Amino acid sequence: MDLGSLLAALALGFVCGAIGRALVPNDAFRSMAGWKSWALSTALGLLGAAVGYWIFTGLLGIGDDDKFDWGGLVGAVIGSVIVVAVASWLINKSAGRRVA
Image (cartoon, rainbow, N blue to C red):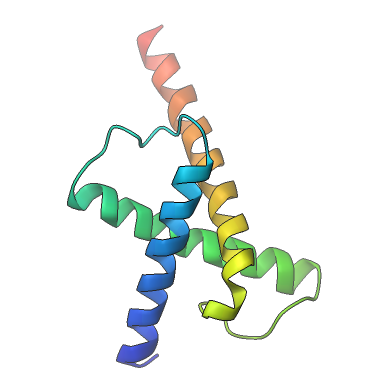
């Protein structure tokens, strides 16, 4: 992976992570601000892009062989929504156990 591909993957991760966080109501990360929020959005988006790639290319046989490209934006956003929802559920569940 060259520098241009890395930067494009990071941009895709940030965009998809931000969209995923905006689409999931009451996500567990809503109180974050600043660089931590940006970094978390990028990480969730990259993980979501990988999940979307796995779902669409691996399971359904739709798409190409490139995981982090802008052509797979819809799959990456869908994967990001899934990742944000699952991560929020896990964090809220574990926070509920600590309080009780």
